[in-house]
Every structure is written in structure tokens, then in C-alpha cells.
Amino acid sequence: MAGPAHPEAMAPPTPGRTRAAPPQMPSTWWSAKRIRTYILFDATGIIYFLIAFLGIRLINALGAGPEAWDAAMESLKNPIYIAFHLLTLVSVIFVAVRFFRLFPKAQPPAMGPMKPPPGPIIHGMLYVVWFGITAFMTAVLAGVIL
Amino acid sequence: MRALLLKIEPIIWLLFGQGILIGTMLLTGWVLVVGLLIPMGMVDASALSWDRAHGLATSWLFGVIPVGQLLLAALLVLPLWKGAHHVRSLLIDFGGAERDGAVGSLLYGVAAVGSVLAILAVVGL
Image (cartoon, rainbow over all chains, first blue to last red; front, side, top):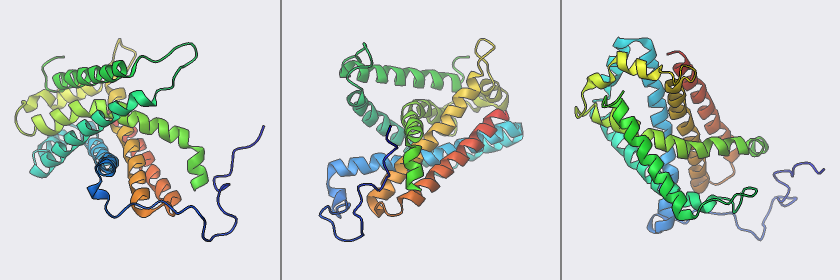
């Protein structure tokens, strides 16, 4: 059996001009809606990075005891944190809406004898699960249930 | 570096995909309550007093599944990989692919270190 292809296998043997121009971001990318939306989708990665590290800080405080936890929760009242969480909520909703639309298109046509459900069914199921988990988590964390 | 990144790409894509899917589903309720409703006074802070928050975080399902810690680990770890992969993609779009090997390794390294820190924080509860 052949080994894996070298990642530079298709590169020209010597550096120099090739017929294929390297891909470049057009300077007018902001005016192109499709590129803008794609870039914004990627940019939500920065928000996900930050919210994860903020969450780690909170859980460390939870493990450190009541005083550290209360101080950490108190710090979240800072308007900068509130603005950041608002931006995070918008980002999370944007990611969900865009990704759920892409998800049905990325399904394989068949997995063995099984075929995936039609795209609109998958799309709808993702929304049902998302709303269900969000409603449940909101109710639990807000002290409404459990 | 790029050869290594290509080799571990299936693992990265698995974590990245779950970061979008599971991370997004878990983050919505978390950000809404912990980041907005409680700090803005719309939900009483006693809902997440230390006793209750610690109890939820260390709760077990059927006595065998540490559901609180598993959910917290997913909530903290998976978005890191979504973040790393999308920031890498963003930097390729704007800065080109010449430095992708080093930049990608650095970003996934940060996500890996963050994942270890998150798991240690959750296990330490």
C-alpha cells in the first residue's frame, strides 16, 4: 500500500513563477457580502477563544471557594464584561444560524444502508435541539428548575 | 510543521466541528444567564450562589455519570478548538499561508494548553 502523499508533493521543484497565482484576499473584501459574512464567521473564533478562557477563570474561582466565586461573579457586573457577553451572544447566534444552514449540505448521501433525513428535517431538528438545550440550561442556571 | 498539522487534521476537525455544534449549543444558555441575566440583575444572584453552583457542577446522573463536570468540560474545551481553527483560517485569509505551519501550531498549542487547564479546573471541583 502506498504511503501518505508528501504535503508539498504538488509544489514546483524550484521556487519561482508558476501559472497558478497564490490566492489573495481582495482589498475590497468588506464590500462583498459573501466574503464579509465568511470573514465574520471566522472572526467569531476570537470570541470563542476569549469566552472559553473566561469560563476557565470562573471554574477555577468556583473550585477555590465561596469568596473567590463571589468575587468572580461580582466582576462580571463590569460594563466591559456585559458588553463582551452581549457580543458573545450575538456571535453564538450568528454561528448557530449559519452553521445549521450548512450542516444538512455536509451530510454524506448514505451511511451504509441508511440515508440521512431530508435537509429541511435535519435543519429543523438542529433548531429544536438548540432551543431545547438553551431553554433547559437557562432554567437550571437561573434556578427555575432543579 | 505543516506535515504534522496535516497528519493530525482529522482530530483537529473533530474537535473544531464539535466546538461549533456542541460548543454553540451549550454556550447560548451559559452566556445568557452567567454573563448577562445575573450581572444585569434580571435573575437573582442566589440562583448561582457558590453552594448551588458547586452542587450543579459536581452533580451526577444515575450516580455513575458526572454530568455536571462533563458538560462544563465540553463547554470550556470545545470552543477553544473552534476558536483556534477559525482564527487560523482568518490569518491565512489576511496574511497568506507562508507562516501557516508556525501560526497553526501556535494556535492549536494554545487550545491544547487551554484544554488541559479547563480539564484540571473541572476535575478540581
